[in-house]
Length: 146
Image (cartoon, rainbow, N blue to C red; front, side, top):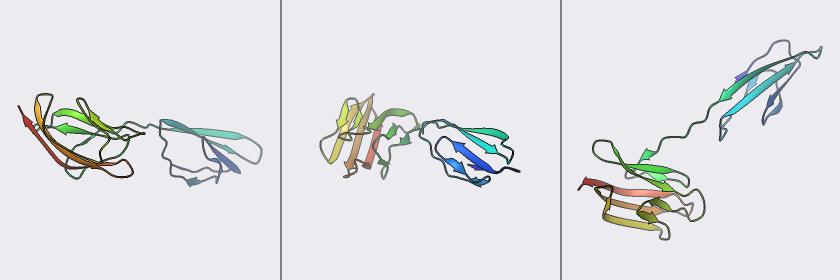
C-alpha cells in the first residue's frame, strides 16, 4: 500500500499503523478483507481522508500431485485425467493435523500408503508423509476410473 499527500503536516493510517509519514508505503497482509483509512492533517488542523479496501479471497485448492506440500489449514484436489475434481484432501488447521477426505482419514501415522482405495467411483493410490510441523508431502498420486 502506498500513499502521497501535499500540504499535510501529519498522517495516520487505521487500522494497524497509527502515525505514518505524509507519504510512503507499507506492506499489508490482512487475513480478511480490510478497509484502510488514511487521515492527513495540515497546519491549520484541517483534515482529509481517503480509504482503500483490500479484498481477501480464499485461494483455490492446489491439485494433489507428487511433490505437493499441504500445510495445516490447506487442501489439495484429486483430479482425474480430464481435470475434474474427484475429491479434496483437507489438512486440519490445528490439533493432529489430520489429512482427510471421507472415507479416508490420515491422522496418527507419520506416513500413509493407500493403494487402490475406491473414492467416488475412482481407484486411488495415494502416498503421503507428515513432518513435525504438520505439513503433508505427497510422494505419489494415481487416479483411475473404475
